[in-house]
Length: 256
Length: 361
Image 1 (cartoon, rainbow over the protein chains, first blue to last red):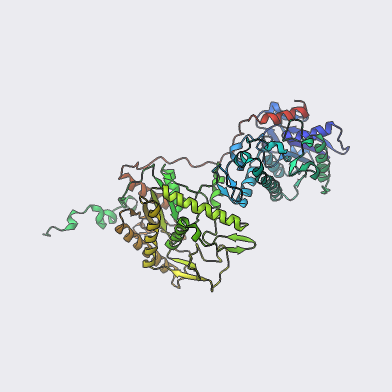
Image 2 (cartoon, each protein chain N blue to C red; image 1 turned 90 degrees about the horizontal axis):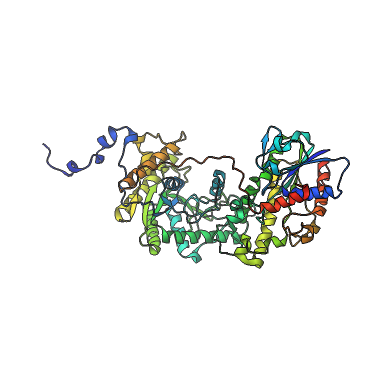
């Protein structure tokens, strides 16, 4: 089975796992990775996805992909890595449009930001739009539109708790460490739910991989599963678990 | 030879033939001599029936200071603006949805000034909660009473603060017909069971508000608003949009005429009796026989964009008498374009580092 991983920095966990020995004899895996908040900026030309900028930063084992992109029809499945709502706002290049910068849920504590206080239902709508407007989701949509390959989504992992340890995060700055936790948890849950909803609406065949429960503590990724000095990216151990799951999903077995 | 009489001294706009009969209808002018100037610094509130939505947008387009006292989340694209509007934001100055009747406007203001007096009656449907005073603002309803009450509080606060700060309140009168709670007399935004809720003839009663009642409700509105802002001026308009349906028992065409005539008459009296109340004739510009129905869509109910534009041209022409710019260049229409890739932030570096580690680049 021919697979192409298309993604941003979150694809690193998968590559590290492969370098550490993860393999499946029946899988031939290519990768096209471009770092960038929200996903890799690729534009579609017929069945090819080509870098829109910074092609020199592209990491890929597909010959000529920096110039010509990757042809989706060459693969049985595309694994798009790093899709989802960015609650920590780290690496988010378009921060001012993030729902956390534009509104608060009206049942959260009243804070100091002066932002509109909207219903949770409307916040879900904002988060869904935010994911849908991301570069990673655009890749998903392109793969669905091309229609030749199965699409498996590798969501961005939940950040570590340390991502919210100082007041550079707007919710922490507004509510303080303790009171920010409930809104942060709610936003992470909303992000997961909206990614599932988007995927279901785009195409019923899309599968979304799940992170193992054991890597989480209080909803955050445990530090031992994160890369060293990094609160956003998971390491090879989690990468291997995700690869196992995506391989199963790609061959039609949907157990996760 | 006729002796001197008052008509001899009137301007030509007072006479049908030169002002209307012998003119191309698109050149009819001086329909409105405003009582007061609307400066581009004045904070202007808008509320009312759906036709009022056009006024706010046109004011903004002409660089007037349309005051959204309860803004929605910041919108960066046309689709985000539409999404906000679907949730009732940025349509009027407050997130009230359409206010068709004077009774409902009065009720909102009473609650804004005394939030403890508000009714917490809700309509429930399939687990969702709807606000009977604005059932359309949350398309799928509120999930909890807590959220419903928080949203109500936000609107009442915005209304109170908006009125305190504004210089002008533009209100478009829409209907004489409405529905009320039979026990409390609270007016609803619309008939229960149409958008949400369930109609119950025991609890929901039809009202076709009379001239006297509407006038009194408006007098109360003026008192309430000026109790917190004694300098607030009012600009009334009557929506030219006929009724979608009538519960009066009359033919809908006759009911529409009766309704609009009543509202027009109330507006006329309020303008005549209060120096701080003016009336702008959007109703006449669209509905007068002089315009031969040309500004209506083929269903003879909806007003065409050209009609709205013509109404607003008269509005700004009137304001130009006070020295305001007659025409400000229209802003370019919003274009929906593919957003450019955002600039890279410093946090991108963390992501690049991850890629470097894994892919050796």
